[in-house]
Structures are given as C-alpha cells and as structure tokens.
Image (tube, helix red, strand yellow):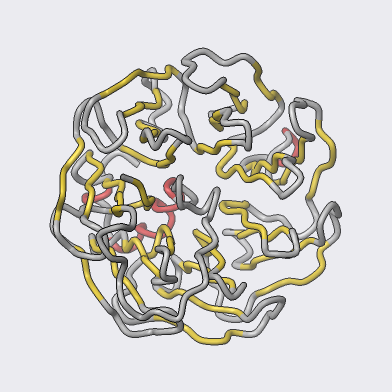
Length: 345
C-alpha cells in the first residue's frame, strides 16, 4: 500500500488488507495481554510510551505515557512503515516497505528511546515481526520466515514453505504459529505450526481458515485466528487442528485481535469500523465499541488495561477505559494512516 491517502472510498477496505495484521510489540501478530487493573486512568509517567506506525507520514511517532503529547518523531530511513516490535533491550524494530515487492526491503533497528539507527536488517518484503523466549528475532517475509540471533543482521536459520506470512505468534510451549495468506495449493490460506528451533512443519491448520491476518492465544493456550475473507474468528484448542468454536457475531473483515487482563477477546473489524468484545470462551458479542473507531487496523493495551485503537482512515488513535465504550482520549498530532501500535521507552 504505497499511497493510502489516495485511496477512494469504494476500494478502501480491499486496499487496507495489505496492512491488516501489521503490528509488533503490541500487534495483531503478537498481541500483548494487558495487566489486570481496576484503574480507569491512562498510564502515569512511569509506564511505557505509545509508538504509532504511520503509513501516511512515513514515520513512527512516540507519545508521552497516557497523554496525546507528541514526544518525538522517527523518520530516518523510514518509508511505508509496518510492523513494530521491541527486543529485550527495548530497541525498536520497524518493518519498512513491507508491501513493495519491487524494492530491496528491510527492517530498521533504532536505539532504545532514540532516533538513532543501530543497524539495518536486509530482507525482502517483511510482513511480520516476533521474538521468541530466547530473544531470537523472527521476520515473516514473502515466502519464508528468517530467524536472527539477538543483535544479528544475518539469519542463522530460515523456515521455508510459508506463503506471505502475515502474522507470527508463539504459544506457551514456544511453538511458532504462522498465518499464511495466498493460494492454499501453494501452502497458503493456512496456519502452520513449528516446534521450538525447528523448520519442519509440526502441523497445519486449514479447517475454518480463510485468509488469516491475525493470531492470538488466550489464557488456556487456545489459538484464535482472524479470518478476513469469511469475517470470522476461529478458535482451536491447544495443540489441535479442528475448529473448537467460530465467532461471527459482529465480526466483519477482522484485522486485529487482543485479550484484556480479564481474558475478554477484542476484535478490530475493518469492515464495520468497530471493535467487538467477547467474554472468555464466548461467541456472542459482549459489547461493541463504535465511538471514535474508523477502519481499525491495530489494538493495544497499556498497563492499566486501557485500550488503544489505530484508526486508519481517521488518522487517529483513540483510547478507552477498561470496560468502556466511550472515547477517553484521541491522539491526532502526527498520526497519519496508522497501521501498528506498540509500547516502549
């Protein structure tokens, strides 16, 4: 998606799919489970700052904890930023040019809390980022997942046979799950699973999978898959490949998934400009958030359970108190077609 600000309304949803599932530190590929809290305030100054990936401004903007104040703007070498992630040293990783197959693409690494580029990781069309428990970086690119040792810029292992890996996630046992878009005959339109440290497929999930764009795990280690083309979220018991439950109530072109500290599931619906909420294990809508939501691309929770939503077409990020559906705060300064959110220094 090279020029999102030029998209006409009639084709907006189709074009936005390219960014669906983009997100990192807190993203649809590796959603962060919020800490339990009864607080209804935004995070105090001791909490991490909010990072926003902006397609429109070719930037990553950073906002002081719990406020709409722009702390800094990162633009050096950034073009069409997508997924965001932080390593254990809190260095920022930005996947750039993720949808431009004509260029040599890369992942940029910035020093913790700085605008300084530490290094560049060359890789073709990076779609998704994730870290395992050992600090190894996984980058989903066009037809592989490349694995890098901490601080490395060259992969020590690659996982072949994947097709446009739109999202990556690890279960509690360290197994890697890859959401593959594309033609099922070529290995796409599936979720493939790999044992820790292995590049061989442990199992393949195809039942109920239809253009998977986001993955998440609940507290029981059950897998949830956002299926864009069928407007469903399918649930699978830990270690199984058969659908345990299908969520369709209120779901329309789902782009991102996240769980709050109480285990409630949140679904960002690109096709309905809404965020729907489901009780733990439930398939019926608990509540729907419409206020301030416009083509939501990413979800994130701060340490107090406040929800943040990246609204692509409105060029805003809106915040909501735990359990709330009214806008608590709107961030617009420096935001331009946001497609990923993360919290960091």
